[in-house]
Image 1: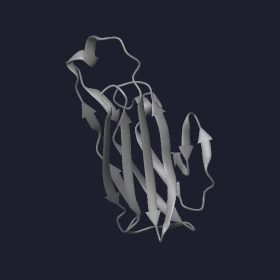
Image 2: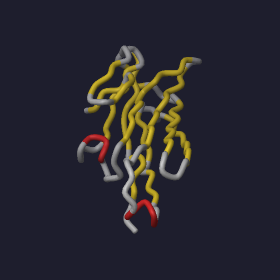
Image 3: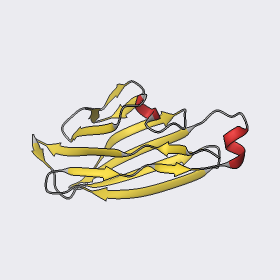
Image 4: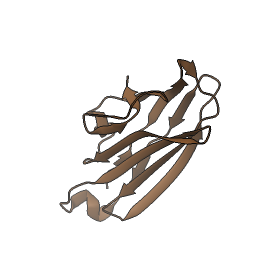
Length: 129
């Protein structure tokens, strides 16, 4: 039974007007279609505006050998001063570690002043660095 990564490790920084944002609340959510599982966790930025989330890993005996199309909806929201910002929205179609970015670690720079954008299947205000 192999590991099935639903959300790879994420780390990043939140800024506003070029300055680090301390105390911003981040909520990460995933929706795994195979098991109809929804999970959430949270993080808070430190004095340097930095945050991190660990990998979300599952295993499934049937899922490891029955053919199916992996589908995990991923979301990260940032809440700061009464505003909610869409940081990361992505539909994941694999179970590999770091599969979101084809093996590249997820390191984000999230500028609260940035416009929403859609790049390489990722929607939100954060850019991959």
